[in-house]
Image (tube, rainbow, N blue to C red; front, top):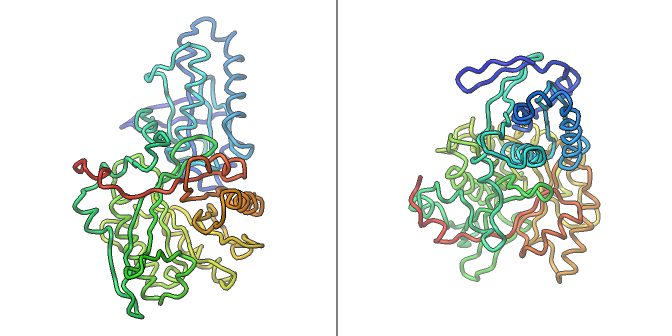
Length: 412
């Protein structure tokens, strides 16, 4: 394996990894930030002349850790004496990087007794040309900043610290009058979607809550069918405007931002233009960091139209998710669509605690294997996270509420 380093971009040759690189060639894993290279060079240096006798043990230990932290469909391949290529299918961006750092940290602790930050060498692969990989070294401190907060602080999302409080208040809440004359208010909150397996923040998610002002009644997304197309489009535009506060920044790394939007809006050319035409949210940032969650796909959605729209929207953003509705055949409406994930809104699972848990188990059983990720969001308490993991969900978020304390810090 050879390498040269220029302007923080390192180019290495993945000698002996042709099969692994061929598997990556037909995927979007590199573009999604799922591919990293772990280096145990620090162990080799500390071992000195003992390295030839020690390396088999190091390789075997890494293999054990890969089995422990990675899924069976993930790619792992040694590409030299000290470098290991890792490509994850269930995590991306900072979440995938955090898993690789965790594996390296455990190896350093086992063989050296300490995991010095200077020895935590993990590189993100940004391009593959033949057997040449373009990489950049990851700053461990920036990645570990995305580990979830303690449960009692779960609603405090660090992303608020980089937002201008006055601008956030201008966009949240927002009121409007529907075509039928109802006064509605939209409140936005931010949730941290945590990987249940790896315990890292895999994405941030915006949650719009629509309330009938006169009665105080919350209108769930499954009841949006009663609103006009223009009403739905207004809610989606407000959501995109709010998302621009968090997804518009160039500095990184950032976890993806999941944004619930209507299939009705995005099935029109005007709606898709709005997705990439929102002020402060340029098209390249939408493609790099926004995952669209279609909230209103149901049994009345034509399968061919769903395939067409998800394909068109998928070209504009980082990925497309679809929300499942509780029922006997929860995955029927999304059958055949190529989706990065399926989601469930905890608020749609009514009943007692045991009934909610039963719904979670039933939905997860039906959805298993249908997409790379299965997420439940808006869980009412921490105890449900264990239920979600046992049921088979890959990601979950707790119900969050906007708090003025989150916005006390000035914009960075």
